[in-house]
Image 1 (cartoon, rainbow, N blue to C red):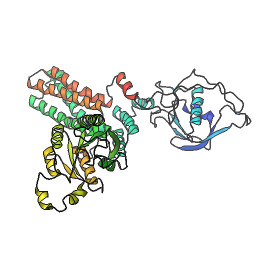
Image 2: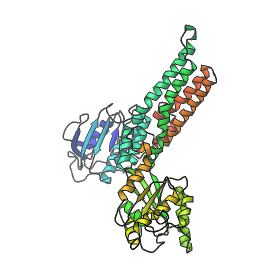
Image 3: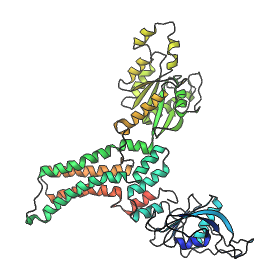
Length: 504
């Protein structure tokens, strides 16, 4: 439970019996007690509300209480609480606690903060909140602590959004990226870009304001060169969103193919448990089966689909239609072929469906190749491009990567995971560069800035007066300021922080 504000110590003291005096930055062991003693009703008032449970107050002087877990949104304080079995001189102990005091400005919000760590009983936590509310605190709004940290200059807006990303992270890699953003990685990457743009604006402003003082004006070529110096790193930052979006949101991977090529077995291998039903009967899978796994720290929703062929009944027809929909919606497609069987006509349908789509061709059932070719000339069959899954793979996409696997033995599964990860990252995914874009809001603002820079370049080439050119340059600067929160409207702030959970 977190209590923040100038009255934090005053509110917390009556409910605590500590072994030592509170000192800034030091955790103290103590007891949670009934502040009013035995048989004395607890008077709950709301006249001096500040903030309690889950956030911090928006008012500059109010204390704020935040619980470490969600509490019920509406607390109805009891009419009276009594402790009938102890004398008034010895307040009843409710729980053992560890209390930490953070003195302003060395705290998350730059306010005085008291953090009380109890054993986690919802009843006890609720009671602590009720005591704080009775003493004059109020329930905090979602994200209010982080908003106060932003408004007080403790963090910028990209760092505030990183707090939410860290809380919502599903994988360790996502948490690490969010921690980088929380450390200001994106702000640090933007800072030199903004600095170059501000310097160009300053030079042009000086040339206008002090024209009669013989202040030199930049020639058009020099202005274009400076605009390009701003644009280039900004374009690189915008390009990082393709990978950053996947890191933040994950992606959907559809496993498609003809019936009985081992799609469900491959699906189970990737999720590392028997999630989908597997039988030797073709067409066992009739509906979509999905599961989210982490590959290289990226959350990937795997979708096992029904085998695609001419349907034999209505149920299978519906399943095949859903398979086609999953293929169309997927960010990445695994086309599974039977490596022990020759190519068939259905492979042409996969070629049509996967044109211009990100595809990995999986030649499954590699363990059956020797059995299938037993008694035949194995070498000549391998060299015949029309005799096996190699022909099917070639018919799909010549440029599509291929991986040979055996879902039965596990052969090639590690290589398939590596190929999926390589495909996700491309050239930028494997790099450890910090400060890439993971947020749609940031991406839109960077694009707005690039558009304004394009307009500025066009203005220079059209010999537009510098007074008008500066309008485009300021239009390029404002979106960059909005990313870090240097210029942000209240509506945008409310939208961002409303997605936080209580207590953050």
